[in-house]
Amino acid sequence: MDLAFSGWAGVLILLVYGLIMLGVGLFTYLKNKNIHQSMDEYYLGGRGLGVIVLFFTLFATQYSGNTVVGYPPSAYRQGYEYLVSVPFFIMIIVAYLLFAPRLYSLGKKYQLVTPAEWFEKRYHSKSITILASLLMLYGLGNYLLEQLIAIGQGVSGLTGGTIPYQVGVVFFVIIMLIYGWLGGMRSVAYTDTMQGIALLFGVFMLLIGSIIYFGGLPTSADYMQAYSPEKLGIPDGPSVINWFSLLVLIGIGASVYPHAIQRIFSAESERTLKRSFSRMAWMPFLTAGVVFIIGIIGISAFPQLSTAESEQLVGMMASVVANQNIIFYWSMVLLFGGVIAAIVSTADSVLLTFSSIVSNDLYGNYINPKTSQYKKLLVGKLVGVVAVGILILIAWFPPGTLYQIFVLKFELLIQIAPGLILGLYWKRLHPKAVFTGMLAGTIVASLMTILGPSFLGVASGLWGLLLNVIICLIGSLMMNVSMVQENEANQLIEL
Amino acid sequence: MDKKKEPINNGKLWIGFGILLALITPWYFPESFGEVLVYGIPLWALIIIIGSILLSAFLSYVIKFHWMLEEEKEEAKKKGDN
Image (cartoon, rainbow over all chains, first blue to last red):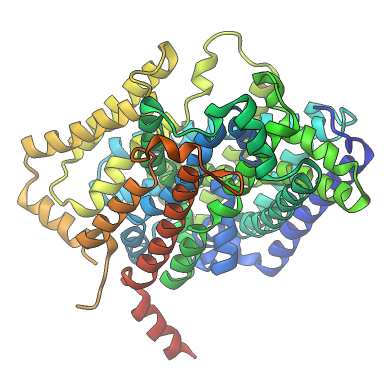
């Protein structure tokens, strides 16, 4: 991407962001020296995140740099049909209401650290816990890979190639590993707060600049009326189905991301969690809504771009805005630095959850359950570092074949949803049905993603999820759980 | 413990969410709603935006008043600690 403000200013802002992140890590470390003895302290910030920090860390898990850079091009190409991105983010919070209230209560009661631990508690089944853990690790690993690639591209774009892709990745990964290691969830959540504020500020400045220099929505509407009226029109039949499935299915899918679930456990209190969710319910207007408007303004500002060219839309608009005056110039530098910081903040959340599953559920539960929390934590952190190292190698030397196996994320992560959510309420849910459903859903979703195009325009992962749910329901109705198991489950999920 | 409230157990709330979901899906607009523009925004999109605002408002209401599992206990404990 050719940015008018790329070069030394980009290098400077990235150094400043990097130093602030390191500072946050060091500060957290000095203030909380005891956190390396306790998984609660390290992975959940001592279950003490207050409203603001919890809100921003939830915000960082839902909105990444991709929201800012990738959504306007979609709005540019689809027009008002892409307005779905606003209610779509609200639906994620609606989906939380299906399980977060009870999961918070139970998480507190049983001191749960990871989503996989809930599976262990609920089903007492080694096979379910291990399968769920592996699914999460695999999905999170690929998610992390995607973020690492995005960091490299972002850094080389912002600095106009002054800092090459590889150096950018290594620089931010090392910083992320250091502050993550030093402060755990607290570091991650505090840096999320800083990154969130920078990103919000930058996006608003871009919106204001775009309206001033390109004209607002009426200008864009005039253009569309003349040249592409379909971008203003009401979505037709298939588009309405697509719209609806985005709202319902992906809304639920995004709410069960493991790192999102883990934040429920980190809340200081129910009131804190409620307030954070309540704020999140309004954020889509300030984020997805704002970037949607930027994309729409782009339609008249840079008409007739090809699909590939339109991917650079935000960079083009920001370059024009940055050329106007010094305030906008630095705002755009801040914005693009913020985009990279936001990608880092998504990556750090994912990595922390990755390590926690290794510490708590695999190593701590099955390999060496008797060891100290300090040791379990250390193993989780080290495995996290090794995993990042392997992912960096994959990012640099992408394999020629089987590339698809690195794409599987959402498809795998949502397969834990039936066992997680139904298990909270339905005491007769049979462990064998949960395991079979999860496995079958995973296989179907993976094969469909790797082999072929989607069916009926619905994402492959959702077909896997549907099969998964059906097996859970029918299997549990066919196989009866024993009275003892049913009573046990009843006591467990009772509030 | 009879004061506990959990959103999932309250059917009425989900009827509300259902209606709002229908409102924010563009299946019910007459053709003309794509032609009328309000400050450059097509009328149908404006109605979707209003529907989305209603959904956020309803969500805030439900979160505040119909989700009450631990809060009283926690707040009482907090007061006791002070």
